[in-house]
Image (cartoon, rainbow, N blue to C red; front, top):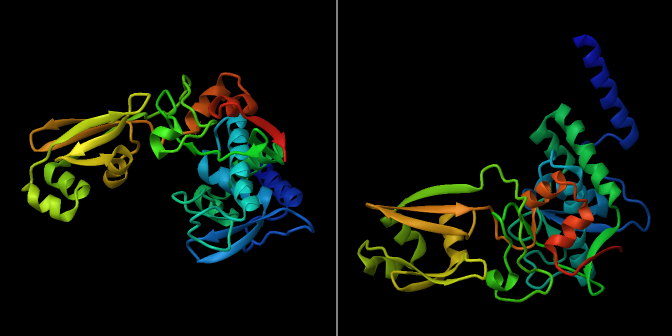
Length: 314
C-alpha cells in the first residue's frame, strides 16, 4: 500500500513538471512577446529581476498568505496583489520609491513580500511545494487580469494579517483620507492567536520610546497616557513622559504586532497587550479566510474590505 502511494505521488509530481515546466531551475522564467512584466528588486542579491506579471503575483500570494487558506481567500489576495503592482507599473513608480528604476521590491516594509519558486521549495520542502504551489497558481490563474478599481482608477489595495474584529480608517493611521479605505466590521477574523502580551522593564521602554537626551533626563521614570483614539477606539496618540508619540511609532519601536494595544504597569514592568496583527487598514487576511469559510467568494470579500470598489478585467 505504501509503495503504491509513493508511486502515485511520484507520478503526480512528474505530471506537474510536465504540465507547468520544471520550476526552480535557476528561477529563470520564460517571458512571451508583449507579456506584461514586473521589474522586481531583490534585497538578498541586490539584483533587479524581470518577471511575467502572473508569475510575480503567484510569488506574492505564496509569501503573503498561508497556502492552505480557502481558495476564495487566495483569489482575493491575488487580485489585491495584482492591483498593487499594476498601480505602480502604470504610474511609472510611486513617489519616494527607495529603489529607482524598478516597479516594486520584495521587502514588505516598502512593498509586497515575494518568494521565488526556489525559495518556496526550501520553505515548504519538495512534496509540499507541489501540493501548495500549484494550488496558489490555480487561484492566481482563475483571477488572471482582474484588478480592483474605484471610480475607474486602480486602488492602492493595502492589506494586513488580522484586524481583531474591525478594520481602520486610513485617515486615522496614515493622516490621509482614502474613500475606499474605510473602517468596516470584520466578524469572521479567524486569527488563531488574536491576542499577544509582551513585557518590558521601565528602563527598556524609556530607551526605546524617548530620544536620548529626554531619556537621560527622565532618570528612569516612565509615564504613559492615552491622548487620542481612532474612530474604532484604538490608540492614535500617546504621551510618554510628556512627549507625544503616534501609536504607530510606539508599535514600531517596541516591535508590537499591532497598534491596537493596551498597557498595565506591574511593579517595575509594563505589560502591553495587542489585538490583531498589522496596521488594520484594508483587506484583513484572516478576515478573508473567515469569510471564505462562511461561503463568500473573492469578489464579495474584496468589495467588503474596500468600500465602493469594482472588480474588473484590466
